Image 1 (cartoon, rainbow, N blue to C red):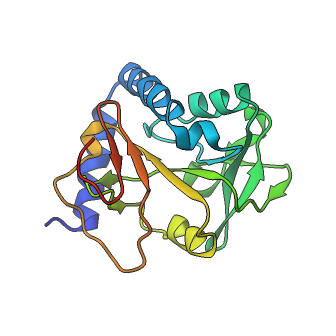
Image 2: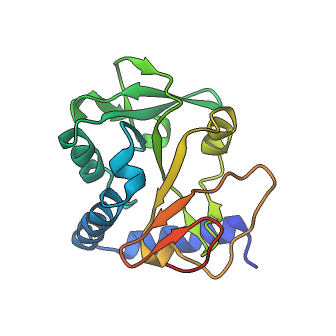
Length: 188
């Protein structure tokens, strides 16, 4: 099995090779698939990452959440932790940690009853996740176990198997432009 470092290098190269048009097309398909899920439809609050560098574009998901009357919050890195700020307008976002868009201002929220839209570098069919290496999502979710977890990724981010560590917290649902995977099962 490849190391997390090798996997990150491989997937970053694949993301870089994608055109903006491909990323947008696939992100819209993923948005349609994710927003059709009961987990999304039933959530009153959504914790979503702000996409960066050819990740699945979450702006479409956020807009759909707003249209449905849901509250939305996005993370800001503070030390070794993430703090979520209510997002009411994309104008709140500015380049932050590693250039990733973060809220520059707003109200900090501490929701326990929410659906988190998780990013990731790579996944496998068991919903195991390789993140970016900072551990921010695992630490946050360890403190907030009742938050629902939905990851979004492009199909090329799916690998036969990814390394797992005891501290990893996996998404309950994983949506790509081609498949939907549920934790504990290997079928779509």
